[in-house]
Image (cartoon, rainbow, N blue to C red):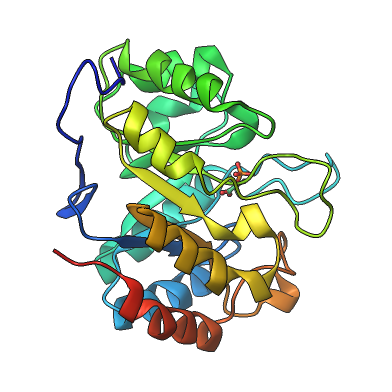
Length: 263
Ligand code: PEP
Ligand code: MN
């Protein structure tokens, strides 16, 4: 059902009026993890100044180590919703278990399925049964075929509001956190009718590569760019090395504006 053969026109996912996949290249920004109301509010206000409305932020964090910050949980979702309502943002946040999906519907505008859960088939089936857009991230070592099949799990349950997100894959290369598979973007757009987002933060894991990676993603036809922004990355509870601060975020947006297609 996600195949181009099943449907030739592009799927456009409407997030409170911002349409992903309509030919305008958009931005999904926000902190790695929700840490406090003040932290999320600072990012939302900076985004608003840039004319952006799609705010990401993790309340449930799938951390590699069990001793790392696991997120604020439902309290984090509440903070996201409150700030979003005050600033005109939409909320994109990761849900880790089928059990939390229904609760999340009250808080989020888009459910994110993270890389570590791309083949959590029960989660995929659960998000396939709800009426909420889903941002599905490519698995850490998933082939494009496996990624497309994960999207198929969602759509086969009835939910066709799916956004695919290339976030880098594991290779032998250690210079970057993951290897951004930039050619996955046109392949996914050719093989499926779904919009494709490129997460430059988790794919590169390097602040100095966010801008060139985003330019490449826009040039190759990504429908949106995802990147992480934190008011004070040095004290961030996760991904401290790779989040932009607010001046860096403003510079990032200014530098990209000539490359961004708007129809
Ligand atoms: C995230 O976007 O917050 C995240 C954890 O990314 P990924 O699932 O791609 O590792
Ligand atoms: Mn992160």
